[in-house]
Length: 109
Image (cartoon, rainbow, N blue to C red; front, side):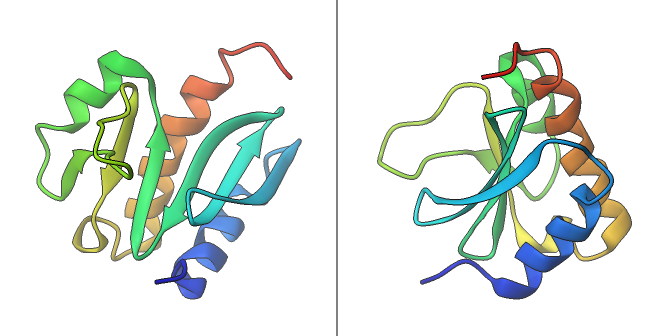
């Protein structure tokens, strides 16, 4: 299944005001990089976030959030947000901001 094009466009709109954001095909979906670092993306109908290990553990306590596992192995520091947790643009923006906040701490590539 390809990335949900509507979710990709919603995410693109959320990230539009950030400088140095690029969309790339990755993980069998679309990943947005920030300053060259993987940040947030869409895989099937799910949002995937790079948030660091501490924030990922915190997010996993929420409904609609699960570990990111695309290959049979959980990716530490990432989280998968299910469609029911990102129905509104405010929800999507809030989750995407967690990823932006983390990736902004990383050195540019």
